Amino acid sequence: MRGLLDFFSVRRLDLMRMVVGILISLNGYPLIFFFKESLGLAPGSTAFTAAFLGLGYLLMVPTTVFRKLYRCNPFLLRFGVIFLVFCIISMYIYPSMFFDSYTQDMLYYLYIFIFLFLLINIPNDIIEVFIPITVAFAVVSNLALVYALLTDPTWTIGSRAAIQYGEGEYRTGNPHVFARNALICVVACGIWVTQPKTHFLARIFALFSGVFSMGILVLTQVRSSILALGIIIFLFLFFNVRPAQIKSVLRQLVRPTSLIVLGLVFIGVSYFIRKNIDLYAVLYGYAVAFVERNMENIYALFGLKSADNFSAALDASASNRATSFLYLRILLEGHLHVILYGQGYKSVYLDVPMLEALVNHGFIGFVIFACLILSMLVYSLKAMRDNPDPLSTFLAYFYIYMFVQMFSVGRPYEMAHWQPLCMMIRFIGIDHLFPSRLLNRPPKLAPQLS
Image (cartoon, rainbow, N blue to C red):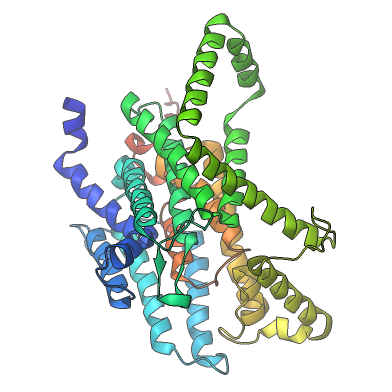
């Protein structure tokens, strides 16, 4: 009880407030859709979205704002600011022929810079509470999605899990934001479970929350998120599991006690499946549909026939990516000069950020953006290897999702991309600046000269 009271001290409640503000900005869209559409507070209102994100910014403001600034990664900051300024200059000097939303885009850039500035004002102490609050925030968003699906008469089993908005034939949803929330929850739960200081009950809660989030991820059927999760699991095993550990586990598994426990777990899981056969059938159906749809894309990519002996075809999403790369191929083969200086700010929408940075902003814009993205990948891999602190480790694994997104969805200047990138700029690769009490393994003291 004393430990619980210490965790919810006044100082930590203030840190939690700032973390909630960060999460609203970073991962607030599932709750925004829930409040706007499911609860009907402001259907289709962009003003509500702006106000909710503004609430996140307000919660982020520390009591020491403007009076105490914290250091961030100077290398990443330099590339990030240069690219954003490059995009703003391009918007006014070399825009697309049909571009006219100057005010709207400048507001987006202003939001990004304000978010980065607030992060620089936020103390490093949020590391103490970041993972538990992230899990709680993501679980609430997952439960909101489940409630919305159960109360939405237009949603049917087999459809992608997302809160629907719009009317009639224009009614649609955005499963990507819910897949992102589920992935954030899985990563945060994995870190919380593996921390030695995590309480037993908290570890159980994190374990169930992670499994629940993986189920949500399956329901969303978002390829980029599921691919990112697979890469994350592989990297976690690569950096944390050694051959000696595998041999030790195998030796323990063949012991009589372990075999009895495994048998009881198998019986328990079998009983749960029999009692919830409908839930199992739904998840199994989603998994099979996901595999079949992606196998269809693979067959189409290689010009093969599908399982039913008909010519395979790419789905709409994969077809858009294929068209984007075909467009790049045309430029490389006959219009190479366009690649050198670009076609102009937001000239072509390719839905592949790295590709769009090259086509719209030319060689210079692409090099700046690519240096930023690849540098963040290097810092992330180093953080995975060293596991310096919970926040750096979380950002490192979550960045794998962002790295996959750079080649699969969106534009290079979207707020949804830049808010996580700002988190990377602020916290990744600077664990040597954190107090030792925030680190998983405090640095060794240098030997004293006698």
